[in-house]
Length: 168
Image (cartoon, rainbow, N blue to C red; front, side, top):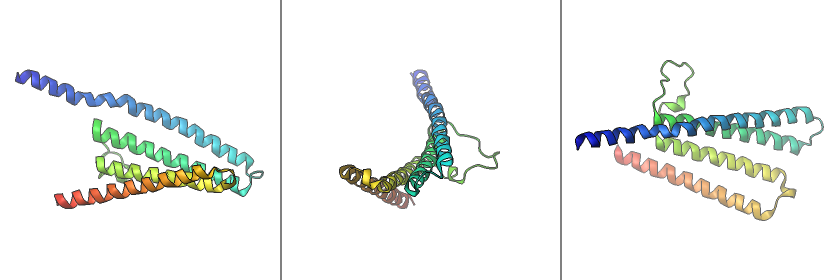
C-alpha cells in the first residue's frame, strides 16, 4: 500500500509540469503584444506632425498600457513558473530582477493586483482624453470597477500584513 501511495504522490508532484504549456503560451502572447507595441510606436512616429495633442497622449498611454501588460505577463510567467513548477537558477545571472528574491504566491497576487490597477487607471485616463466620445455609463462602470480593484488590493495588503504579523 505504501508503494501505491508513494507512486501516487510522485504523479501528483509531477503534475505541476502540466502548467508548462500555459507559460509557453504566455511567452507567445508577449510577442503579440510586442507587435502591437511596435505598430503603435511606428504609427505615432509617422503621424506625429498630423496627430493632435490628445491623439499623441492617447498613443503614449497605449504604449504605457502595453508596457504594463508586458510587465504583468513577465511577473506571471516567471513568478508562476518559479512558485508552482520549478525553481529557476538565477544565481549565476548578473541581471536577475530584484523582485524575484522575495517571491511567493501572496507577493505575486499583490504585484498582479497593483499592475491591474495601474492598467485600469491608464484605461480610465484614455477614456478621459476622449471624453467627448465616451458613454457616461461606461465611464461610471470603469470608475466602479477601478474602486473595486483598489478595495481588493487594500484587502490583500491588510490580510497579508495581519497574517505576516500573526506568524512573527
